[in-house]
Image (cartoon, rainbow, N blue to C red):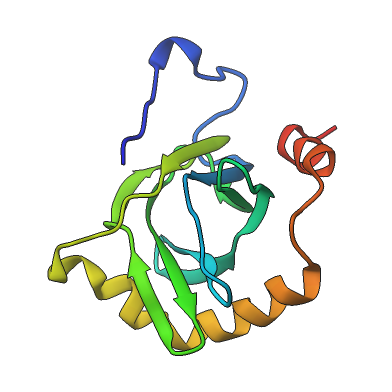
Length: 150
């Protein structure tokens, strides 16, 4: 997974530390029945698990968003979970909070990278219930309104 940060397109009207809504999008995820996708996010000392919703079933694109401080260092990992627990997880990523972080699903093959998923196992169960209650797939127009603050 890669993160692109072009300094020519930085928003100069927002200073570092201002709260922004960061949109996480993960593409090319194709799930079996009973599986769901979660984002494991660590910003500072806080860890949280966010359920991701399908916005495009054909391309396997899932999304979620969270308020973060602009350009704050974050650590995140994606996980696929079923009833038994975490099935797959992505490598642990480090980056800076910005408006949109786009990633392509890539399962982790390194045993040392599974730490975040293990730490958040109990929280993932609560997120699964929230995602199921909200319904899938999400309205694409509604997602764009949330994403761009319209």
